[in-house]
Length: 117
Image (cartoon, rainbow, N blue to C red; front, side):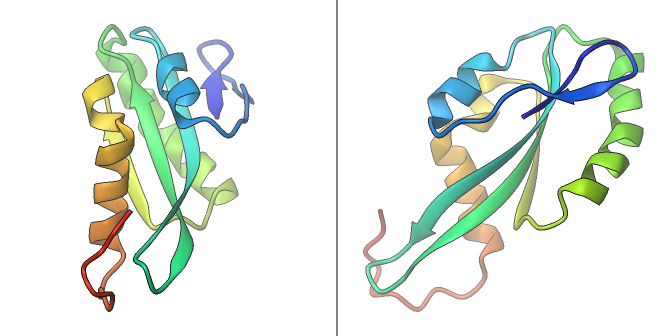
């Protein structure tokens, strides 16, 4: 996860394996970019899918939100390969089920027999 250290600089704020830890670390005053890896697929194939989550908590002001769009261009120069992008301001927008659903829709064709994780 990349997080604003101050008004102008973004730093690596953490990494981990537990999605709930990531989600819980996103505060109402925070601005952050999270690169997440989710294993998805059906009973015939499993594959890793990646999403870029842009988080601006509900207490982040309009000017700071606007500055994030410029910063996101730089972030995307570093984090280039992801299947879906999610812009979120509320924890309900970044539940694991929501992220999986967004990645599933971005994944294209579905050749399994209908059984999913």
